[in-house]
Length: 396
Image 1 (cartoon, rainbow, N blue to C red):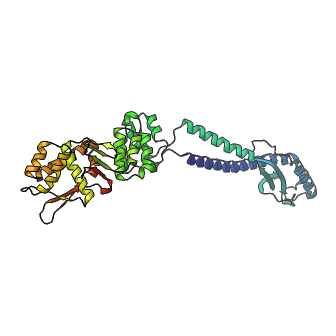
Image 2 (image 1 turned 45 degrees about the vertical axis):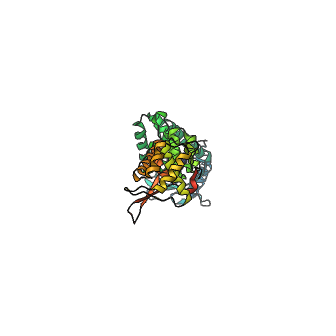
Image 3 (image 1 turned 30 degrees about the horizontal axis):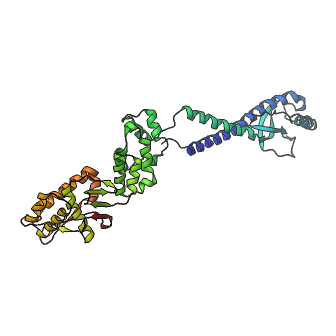
């Protein structure tokens, strides 16, 4: 995924720290090289060869050499100039030993430089000691410059994308998004948020509307705790509301109590407040199944294929008569009883009409479950919804 602000700050500070360490090392190296070069020249100009011995290696006048060297140390006190941008400041340099003679033995320095000078064809060992204060403002300026430079580079150079982000860019570009639109859609999400499960991909494709450029909103939705905490059934109701109306209605339906309300006085069926268009005769049978689910365990054994059930037929015909049901259907029940074929057909009509209204997946929660009768090999059916979710006004 695109680097987060936190990662970018850590990177900037790490680069700044490395830059400071590099500056510290280079500044000391450069200082030592310049000191050796300039002090070598200074000593060549200051010290007379007559102070040194001839080719036998002895020093002619060690006392005079030491006195002159002390004078050199006094002149070295302001040998290095201070600049505001220097990595080191207030540097003190002292000639420590010259050809084995201790010049400055009372003060210890943190840094030592050793080199040789030729006098009378003999390499004379020179040891310099120096110490400097770290110029903190210079280092802080460097850190600030590095951060500013990285910020400028980030502004003009797109951040590196992960493999997950590149897949999203490709996916969205194949669905009509411009590169800029696709980048904007995923820019606020990390790899974990973009690594959808198979279920999330199904949901994303269900809600995503490329013409509305709503990918970012759907990614945010699917990563939200509120959506993740929905039950599978409530997610289906959310999808129903989202696809038929808008996200406000989707949340309303997802949060509404699961309830079927049947009012035969007005021939009305509603689920979670959504009116379900269903024909009158299938509605009577559905109301009958729902009422049985509230009165007992709800299981109703299908009649035999060769023998009608007059007892159940009478109950349903009376229900239809009470609420102005179809006359032909009423007479058939009164004269011929409840047939297996009639019951099967009306369950099929209920199923088709619920699917037409709610979609196949959502409708399943409000249809029927079944089990075989061990004795007769016939099938028991009942409404699958829980009794506490049923409200039926059938006057009995």
